[in-house]
Image 1: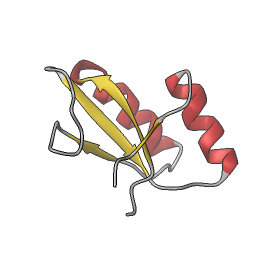
Image 2 (image 1 turned 180 degrees about the vertical axis):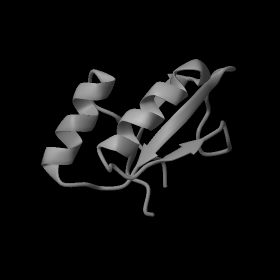
Image 3 (image 1 turned 135 degrees about the vertical axis):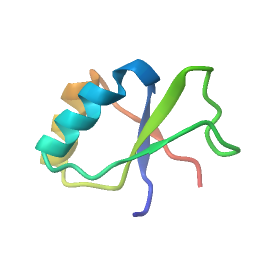
Image 4 (image 1 turned 90 degrees about the horizontal axis):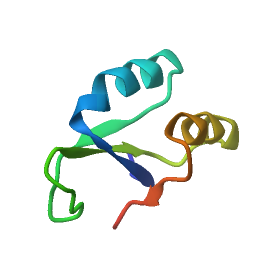
Length: 72
């Protein structure tokens, strides 16, 4: 999967978000802090590929805004 954008979320929110994204059949991966993604303690990133605007609108609505561009 080519990574396009991501959202930073607290680890405690992963269960609900993962379940919701899977039910909507939206592709994603969960990443921990790394050299590319500097995250605060207790945070993880939910990373997405490029997607059709209809799917992106569902993601944007779920997370309450636009994601951050994934660093390449």
